[in-house]
Amino acid sequence: MNTTTVLYDGECQFCKKWVHFAQSKLQDKTISFFPFNSVESIKIEQEFQIGNQDSVVYIQNNIVSFKSQALLKICKQLQFPYNYLVFLKILPTFLLNFGYDFIAKRRLKLTNNKACCNGK
Image 1 (tube, one colour):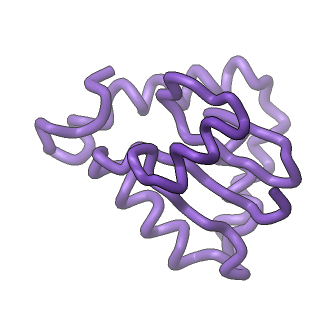
Image 2: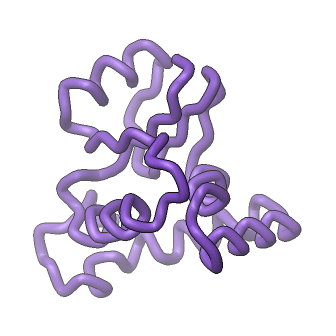
């Protein structure tokens, strides 16, 4: 797989809004976004043996990234000033993933949608 692909929770309003924002701010339209429940996503998950994913997945040049690392790779491709978020990489991954998990567990409250996400 030579293209850049992002898999996300398509049932989550917070996730969908973030993906829409990212698509509108991309420098180049070189990322394909697929919700987890799409046919394309299921094929990609099988190809890369990705199972039970509860985070965003970023795939580029057959390298798979999850959680905060996936988000930072997306941010790197956004327009100024959002691409400067990549400087968060100076923080340890466990700390970035803690922040990712903190937001992921509260995404229902962030969107006021009771049917959002995995309920985590």
